[in-house]
Amino acid sequence: MAGNARFKAVITLLLVTGLGPQSGVLAGEEDPFAEARERMVRETIELRDVSDPATLRAMRAVLRHEFVDPAMIRQAYADRPLPIGYGQTISQPYIVAFMTELLQVGPGDVALEIGAGSGYQAAVLAEIVDKVYTIEIVPQLAELSTERMERLGYDNVTVKEGDGYFGWEEHAPFDAIIVTAAATHIPPPLVEQLRPGARMVIPVGPPMQVQTLMLVEKDEEGQVRQRSLMPVRFVPLTGER
Image (tube, rainbow, N blue to C red; front, top):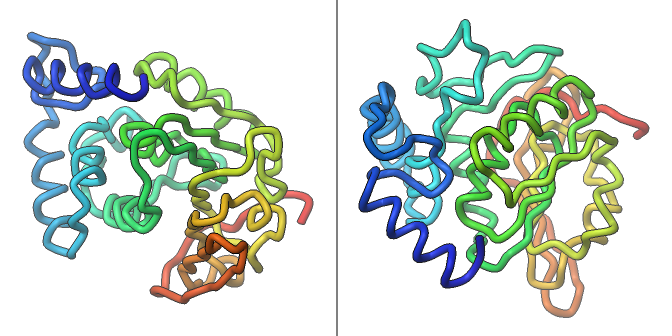
């Protein structure tokens, strides 16, 4: 959904369920994790200075327990990364919220994600922007993410199996790019696919060590500047490069 239609749908579902448009919890259904999700947002995200209203609404709306391994469902709302198989993880909620806020996106925007994983970050963005394209190099995870998006009603998310290093030129330029795995350097194709005035958030550094979360900004004249934000630890970006 987009524009006024998406806004009206949001208002309707908030009134009926108290949750966002893609939440997957229907009117009359009990959400056993509603309290845990609210506590996650209030105690581990808001108290750590994430204040963007759209980001906070998205974090409240997305059912994180739908994106974790069933064996770890009781830990879904803990502020920690969790394994999702195939050597990959779902990032801790605070990092997801922090990176989302940094993108400064809104309705009508189109975002690219590199590293779909279980699909959680894409779902959070899908609550805010018009369209999300996400690339996952692990075939099994790409398939699972596609199935999950369809089941939960995220019809504004498209998942592709492939090497995220090269981005998705067919749909460029993007209003935002988010990379959820650590690269040894900032991939030039991703910088090229940023729209002037857009932002990219990416962890950069050696595999399996402490990395640096970087903010890449392209101004309206096409000039690019980079800023180091904080130490992080992500699984490595894999692929041809």
